Length: 125
Image (cartoon, rainbow, N blue to C red; front, side):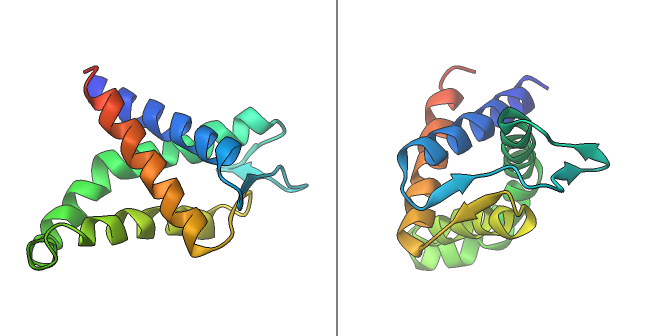
């Protein structure tokens, strides 16, 4: 349970840092922003939802994807894991209209931030 909390905290922090420091990444409140029937009216509501979903995906789904793509990671000497992480963040960009990531470089640097925050918060467990 503690690891799940740290993954969610890392997701929220990494989305916040990406929006704050990377050009091409923005988080906006739309007129019809809602998630599972709850209306998202504040910036931090949207940030908590998107970051929380990123943390949950990294906790539950990413280990399964890591296992499935293990041969590709072995063949590419681990570089395929960058593409896998970029695909997860791209999926969140598609899923949530409030999150906008423009360009491949912005997606890459957002992935680097997510990796770095997960790495450093993983040391605090």
